[in-house]
Length: 141
Image 1 (spheres, helix red, strand yellow):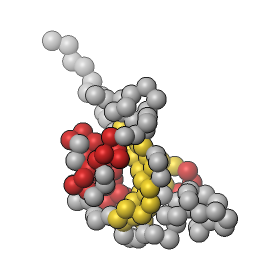
Image 2 (image 1 turned 60 degrees about the horizontal axis):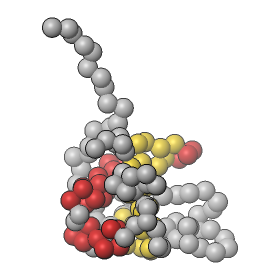
Image 3 (image 1 turned 90 degrees about the horizontal axis):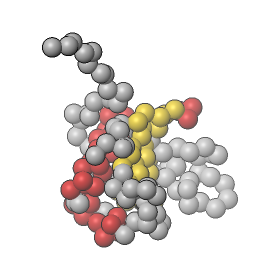
Image 4 (image 1 turned 90 degrees about the vertical axis):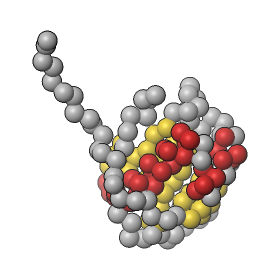
């Protein structure tokens, strides 16, 4: 028997914190903006992203008050933008002066689908300074 080093995951563990409630803020033909509490922690945002991941795998978006039919009709992908509070949530849809300035202020993004794989899913926690934390391997089966 050959001893092999155990590869460490480059992804953070799934949080044990339950996802906080969120509200549907806005939809377009290919994106959904969700808003949760203004003081939501990174673990709570990650829990929402994992909740979206689970809903994609089990086809249960309707249980989250997100239309499963809308999600299934994606062509080829759909983006979910999660914001802490509503203050900056309209930034992607506001003409003229942006509510929080010229940068992107979402706390997390979830993407379902791609041009080559309709079931690919990806999630990132977004941090200041354009830093992000990938939550899982988007190409894993």
